[in-house]
Length: 262
Length: 315
Image (tube, rainbow over all chains, first blue to last red):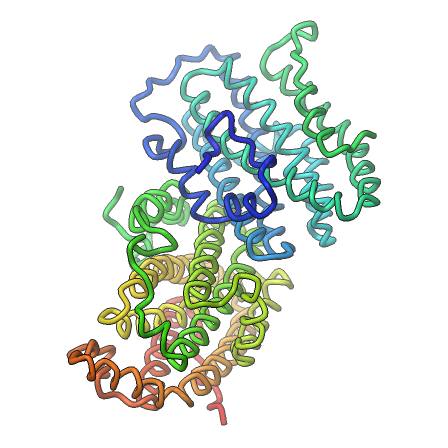
């Protein structure tokens, strides 16, 4: 069985029946996370020695992690709400695995904040949250509350997951060893979620091409929030504007695979 | 991994311990260590990969149909638990409760999956699973679920957790234990599948007891509503038991005769809450199950400061 941690594995390229049987099960999830979490309680090797941070570096990392918590909490709230909206049991089961993944991400990022000496994690998250992410969360949860499965899956499993996947990969390449290992496990999860979103929406759009217009409208509303969040992240990473990487490309590629040009 | 099992802790034992410390026992990390990396390690759909349903269960129509009917009720209950636990996450008052409920959501999804797989193992076609569940789910069990899901849909966290983690899970815990005792001798596959779910349910019940007591004390005005819900859910539960056991006599006798003809009696010497499974009648078994579950309700509700309400007896 292909695993989510296999770089070459692309779940959205599987045939529909194979895809559903393969990835929308507890067993698949179990095997996937077991591979990369077994020896990493709280997402990292406990024998790793943590880095000594300069005060400015520590503050940058705290702000980044606080915003990761905002995004992951939004995903936890949305994916748990989507369990009841799912059209079939397999999608329900997948969303349940995603809810557990998102809860784990919240947990490991909050623990990392505590390990960095943050005594009131909730307060730090509240004061450092990027308003664009808060606004994104509001849109996402509104789709869930309105019972709009495909809009919510698009916002969460395509836009939010792509944004996180892109940022986390970039941050992982520059992060301290502990944070990098935590991000490595989170990225492996995000790829699974993204694969589900692309496959689910791809099939829905093939059946109902007119729905493409609604998703494109969602994209127009949320793109600015995503791009704003990217910029905030670059600043939190201490990059100058001329050093900003082109992280928007991966985001755009994933969205365009669904043919959702604005 | 700590040897302490949060599911067996009691409210009185956590007095003086910060709720945050207590809830940390229900982290995703701890869940990973206990469940997928613990008692589920090496299993497929909750059982040893080499185990299968017994041949006679698949070959004798009445036994197979009875097993399908029982499995359908398990799926119906677990689907309700999945909807309830996921629906409660957004109403949870703190991150650690959200985290626990996320693990419970995944547990319930796993239970739906493994019991659905059992239905397929019993010969139900994959494409017929939903229609089979719709046709055979007991209407009283469906109503039981609706009472709970109405509370969840309205965002009532206290009633939702009591309804799910004490009433529904308490019922499931005892039913699974009973089925496991009855299956241990002649269907190791099903018995092992149930063992994993029992371990999960124990954790869920423990969370319900330990997390909700403080909220009940903060919101004493919720008590009357929660007690009314408990009486209603208990009524539909008893009605489900009555209907499920009403035509079980012939099948239980058939299974017993079959085993005796093969020169064995897998129930010999097996008892559950004082009932000798080799000789018990369906009505006696129903009474033992009802008494056990209601007794558990009374004890667990008492721990969180809720007065147990005796349900009406189904006609």
